[in-house]
Figure 1 (cartoon, rainbow, N blue to C red):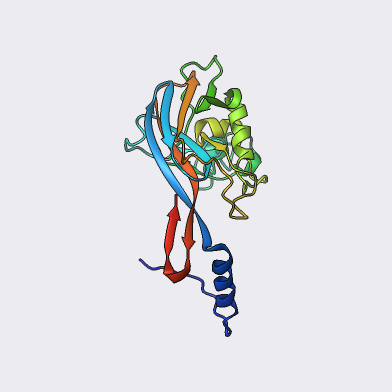
Figure 2 (figure 1 turned 90 degrees about the vertical axis):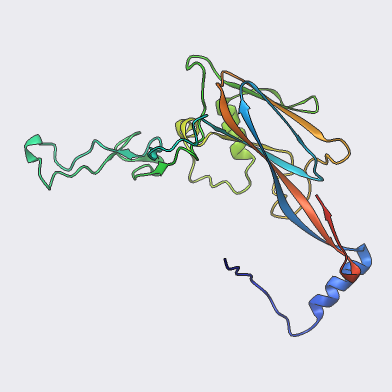
Length: 248
Protein backbone atom coordinates (compact mmCIF):
# COMPACT_ATOMS: atom_id res chain seq x y z
CA UNK A 1 0.00 0.00 0.00
CA UNK A 2 1.21 3.48 -0.86
CA UNK A 3 0.04 6.94 0.17
CA UNK A 4 0.31 10.09 -1.91
CA UNK A 5 0.17 13.24 0.21
CA UNK A 6 0.28 16.77 -1.13
CA UNK A 7 2.73 18.92 0.83
CA UNK A 8 3.26 22.66 0.39
CA UNK A 9 6.67 23.92 1.43
CA UNK A 10 7.50 27.58 2.11
CA UNK A 11 10.95 29.10 2.02
CA UNK A 12 10.18 31.24 5.08
CA UNK A 13 8.79 30.46 8.53
CA UNK A 14 5.63 32.50 8.01
CA UNK A 15 3.34 29.48 8.27
CA UNK A 16 5.03 28.23 11.43
CA UNK A 17 4.63 31.65 13.02
CA UNK A 18 0.93 31.75 12.14
CA UNK A 19 0.41 28.34 13.75
CA UNK A 20 2.33 29.37 16.87
CA UNK A 21 0.30 32.60 17.18
CA UNK A 22 -2.95 30.62 16.81
CA UNK A 23 -1.94 28.17 19.53
CA UNK A 24 -0.82 31.03 21.79
CA UNK A 25 -4.09 32.96 21.40
CA UNK A 26 -6.59 30.07 21.48
CA UNK A 27 -4.59 27.37 23.20
CA UNK A 28 -4.79 24.79 20.44
CA UNK A 29 -5.01 24.28 16.69
CA UNK A 30 -8.30 22.65 15.63
CA UNK A 31 -8.31 20.01 12.89
CA UNK A 32 -11.86 18.67 12.26
CA UNK A 33 -12.29 15.32 10.53
CA UNK A 34 -15.14 12.94 9.75
CA UNK A 35 -15.92 9.98 11.96
CA UNK A 36 -18.47 7.25 11.20
CA UNK A 37 -20.27 4.77 13.42
CA UNK A 38 -22.15 1.85 11.89
CA UNK A 39 -25.07 -0.22 13.16
CA UNK A 40 -26.60 -3.32 11.62
CA UNK A 41 -30.16 -4.44 12.23
CA UNK A 42 -32.55 -7.05 10.89
CA UNK A 43 -35.31 -4.53 10.47
CA UNK A 44 -38.83 -5.72 11.10
CA UNK A 45 -40.77 -2.52 11.71
CA UNK A 46 -38.55 -0.89 14.36
CA UNK A 47 -34.78 -0.51 14.74
CA UNK A 48 -33.01 1.20 17.65
CA UNK A 49 -29.53 2.66 18.03
CA UNK A 50 -27.62 5.26 20.04
CA UNK A 51 -24.99 7.84 19.11
CA UNK A 52 -22.57 9.72 21.40
CA UNK A 53 -20.69 12.46 19.56
CA UNK A 54 -19.75 16.12 19.79
CA UNK A 55 -21.26 16.80 16.37
CA UNK A 56 -23.67 14.30 14.83
CA UNK A 57 -24.07 15.55 11.25
CA UNK A 58 -26.09 12.96 9.33
CA UNK A 59 -27.74 9.59 9.59
CA UNK A 60 -27.57 7.28 6.56
CA UNK A 61 -29.96 4.34 6.21
CA UNK A 62 -29.42 1.64 3.59
CA UNK A 63 -32.04 -1.07 3.07
CA UNK A 64 -31.06 -4.44 1.60
CA UNK A 65 -32.78 -7.75 1.09
CA UNK A 66 -32.05 -10.38 3.72
CA UNK A 67 -30.30 -12.54 1.10
CA UNK A 68 -27.89 -9.74 0.11
CA UNK A 69 -24.84 -11.92 0.78
CA UNK A 70 -26.03 -14.77 -1.46
CA UNK A 71 -23.84 -15.14 -4.52
CA UNK A 72 -25.72 -14.30 -7.71
CA UNK A 73 -25.28 -12.72 -11.12
CA UNK A 74 -25.22 -8.90 -11.40
CA UNK A 75 -28.59 -7.18 -11.73
CA UNK A 76 -29.44 -4.66 -14.45
CA UNK A 77 -30.12 -1.22 -12.98
CA UNK A 78 -33.69 -0.14 -13.66
CA UNK A 79 -34.09 1.90 -16.85
CA UNK A 80 -30.82 0.84 -18.46
CA UNK A 81 -30.24 -1.36 -21.50
CA UNK A 82 -31.34 -4.96 -21.70
CA UNK A 83 -31.85 -7.43 -24.54
CA UNK A 84 -34.50 -6.71 -27.14
CA UNK A 85 -33.24 -4.22 -29.77
CA UNK A 86 -31.67 -5.49 -33.01
CA UNK A 87 -30.12 -3.66 -35.94
CA UNK A 88 -32.55 -5.37 -38.32
CA UNK A 89 -36.30 -5.81 -37.95
CA UNK A 90 -36.40 -8.69 -40.44
CA UNK A 91 -36.19 -12.06 -38.75
CA UNK A 92 -34.79 -13.51 -41.97
CA UNK A 93 -31.65 -11.43 -41.43
CA UNK A 94 -30.65 -13.55 -38.46
CA UNK A 95 -26.92 -13.44 -39.12
CA UNK A 96 -23.86 -11.55 -37.95
CA UNK A 97 -25.37 -8.24 -39.15
CA UNK A 98 -28.44 -8.65 -36.94
CA UNK A 99 -26.82 -7.68 -33.66
CA UNK A 100 -28.65 -7.27 -30.35
CA UNK A 101 -27.63 -3.78 -29.21
CA UNK A 102 -30.01 -3.64 -26.24
CA UNK A 103 -32.92 -1.35 -25.51
CA UNK A 104 -33.30 1.06 -22.55
CA UNK A 105 -36.18 0.06 -20.30
CA UNK A 106 -37.71 3.53 -20.03
CA UNK A 107 -37.68 4.66 -23.67
CA UNK A 108 -35.76 4.02 -26.88
CA UNK A 109 -33.88 7.33 -26.57
CA UNK A 110 -32.49 6.53 -23.13
CA UNK A 111 -33.61 9.45 -20.98
CA UNK A 112 -31.57 10.39 -17.89
CA UNK A 113 -28.42 8.76 -19.29
CA UNK A 114 -29.95 5.26 -19.45
CA UNK A 115 -28.91 4.51 -23.04
CA UNK A 116 -26.11 2.23 -21.86
CA UNK A 117 -25.55 -0.93 -19.87
CA UNK A 118 -25.29 -0.68 -16.10
CA UNK A 119 -25.21 -3.46 -13.55
CA UNK A 120 -25.16 -3.67 -9.78
CA UNK A 121 -24.28 -6.56 -7.49
CA UNK A 122 -26.79 -8.03 -5.08
CA UNK A 123 -24.56 -7.04 -2.15
CA UNK A 124 -24.76 -3.33 -2.99
CA UNK A 125 -28.34 -3.29 -4.22
CA UNK A 126 -30.47 -1.20 -1.88
CA UNK A 127 -34.18 -1.61 -2.46
CA UNK A 128 -37.54 -0.83 -0.93
CA UNK A 129 -39.00 -4.14 0.25
CA UNK A 130 -42.74 -3.57 0.47
CA UNK A 131 -45.13 -5.98 2.13
CA UNK A 132 -47.92 -4.75 -0.17
CA UNK A 133 -47.62 -2.89 -3.47
CA UNK A 134 -51.08 -1.33 -3.03
CA UNK A 135 -50.25 0.40 0.27
CA UNK A 136 -47.89 3.36 0.74
CA UNK A 137 -44.77 2.98 2.86
CA UNK A 138 -44.13 5.34 5.78
CA UNK A 139 -40.96 6.22 7.68
CA UNK A 140 -40.60 7.93 11.07
CA UNK A 141 -37.31 8.73 12.81
CA UNK A 142 -37.35 9.51 16.52
CA UNK A 143 -34.40 10.85 18.52
CA UNK A 144 -34.86 11.16 22.29
CA UNK A 145 -38.66 11.31 21.88
CA UNK A 146 -38.40 14.02 19.18
CA UNK A 147 -39.75 13.15 15.72
CA UNK A 148 -37.56 14.12 12.75
CA UNK A 149 -39.43 15.29 10.76
CA UNK A 150 -42.64 15.87 12.68
CA UNK A 151 -44.72 13.68 10.36
CA UNK A 152 -44.51 10.25 8.76
CA UNK A 153 -42.73 10.45 5.41
CA UNK A 154 -43.67 8.53 2.31
CA UNK A 155 -41.05 7.13 -0.05
CA UNK A 156 -41.12 10.11 -2.48
CA UNK A 157 -40.78 12.50 0.47
CA UNK A 158 -37.84 10.50 1.84
CA UNK A 159 -36.21 10.64 -1.60
CA UNK A 160 -36.62 14.43 -1.82
CA UNK A 161 -35.34 14.89 1.73
CA UNK A 162 -32.26 12.76 1.09
CA UNK A 163 -31.36 14.68 -2.08
CA UNK A 164 -31.68 18.02 -0.26
CA UNK A 165 -29.51 16.80 2.61
CA UNK A 166 -26.50 16.07 0.41
CA UNK A 167 -24.39 19.19 -0.21
CA UNK A 168 -22.54 17.80 -3.22
CA UNK A 169 -25.55 16.39 -5.05
CA UNK A 170 -25.30 16.82 -8.83
CA UNK A 171 -28.67 18.09 -10.07
CA UNK A 172 -27.81 17.08 -13.66
CA UNK A 173 -27.75 13.36 -12.88
CA UNK A 174 -30.96 12.72 -11.01
CA UNK A 175 -32.21 9.25 -10.23
CA UNK A 176 -35.72 8.36 -11.16
CA UNK A 177 -38.08 7.34 -8.38
CA UNK A 178 -38.17 3.87 -9.90
CA UNK A 179 -34.38 3.55 -9.70
CA UNK A 180 -34.42 4.89 -6.17
CA UNK A 181 -36.97 2.32 -5.02
CA UNK A 182 -35.42 -0.71 -6.74
CA UNK A 183 -31.65 -0.14 -6.70
CA UNK A 184 -30.55 2.88 -4.61
CA UNK A 185 -32.92 2.98 -1.65
CA UNK A 186 -30.82 5.01 0.80
CA UNK A 187 -32.14 7.69 3.14
CA UNK A 188 -30.17 10.60 4.58
CA UNK A 189 -31.20 12.69 7.61
CA UNK A 190 -29.19 15.88 8.14
CA UNK A 191 -28.70 17.45 11.59
CA UNK A 192 -26.00 20.01 10.72
CA UNK A 193 -26.14 23.37 8.98
CA UNK A 194 -26.12 23.43 5.14
CA UNK A 195 -22.65 23.59 3.56
CA UNK A 196 -20.96 23.13 6.94
CA UNK A 197 -18.77 20.39 5.45
CA UNK A 198 -17.20 22.83 3.00
CA UNK A 199 -16.32 25.20 5.87
CA UNK A 200 -15.28 22.34 8.18
CA UNK A 201 -17.74 23.39 10.88
CA UNK A 202 -18.94 21.15 13.69
CA UNK A 203 -22.58 22.27 13.63
CA UNK A 204 -24.36 18.97 14.25
CA UNK A 205 -26.10 17.60 17.32
CA UNK A 206 -24.00 17.53 20.50
CA UNK A 207 -24.92 14.27 22.21
CA UNK A 208 -22.01 13.96 24.66
CA UNK A 209 -23.89 14.80 27.86
CA UNK A 210 -26.99 12.79 26.94
CA UNK A 211 -26.53 9.94 24.49
CA UNK A 212 -28.94 10.21 21.56
CA UNK A 213 -31.32 7.24 21.55
CA UNK A 214 -32.60 6.77 18.02
CA UNK A 215 -35.53 4.73 16.79
CA UNK A 216 -36.64 4.15 13.21
CA UNK A 217 -40.23 2.99 12.68
CA UNK A 218 -41.54 1.95 9.28
CA UNK A 219 -44.87 0.79 7.89
CA UNK A 220 -45.34 -1.53 4.89
CA UNK A 221 -41.63 -2.42 4.91
CA UNK A 222 -40.93 -6.14 5.15
CA UNK A 223 -38.09 -7.80 7.02
CA UNK A 224 -34.79 -6.59 5.58
CA UNK A 225 -31.17 -5.91 6.40
CA UNK A 226 -30.76 -2.31 7.55
CA UNK A 227 -27.35 -0.63 7.60
CA UNK A 228 -27.20 2.57 9.67
CA UNK A 229 -24.27 4.97 9.48
CA UNK A 230 -23.91 7.92 11.87
CA UNK A 231 -21.76 10.57 10.19
CA UNK A 232 -20.05 12.71 12.84
CA UNK A 233 -17.47 15.48 12.93
CA UNK A 234 -14.65 14.80 15.38
CA UNK A 235 -11.92 17.28 16.29
CA UNK A 236 -8.19 16.85 16.70
CA UNK A 237 -6.65 19.58 18.85
CA UNK A 238 -2.91 20.25 18.67
CA UNK A 239 -1.53 22.25 21.58
CA UNK A 240 1.83 23.57 22.60
CA UNK A 241 4.51 21.04 23.40
CA UNK A 242 3.03 18.58 20.90
CA UNK A 243 0.00 17.97 23.09
CA UNK A 244 -2.77 16.08 21.27
CA UNK A 245 -6.44 15.88 22.21
CA UNK A 246 -9.26 14.16 20.32
CA UNK A 247 -12.90 15.17 20.81
CA UNK A 248 -15.08 12.49 19.29
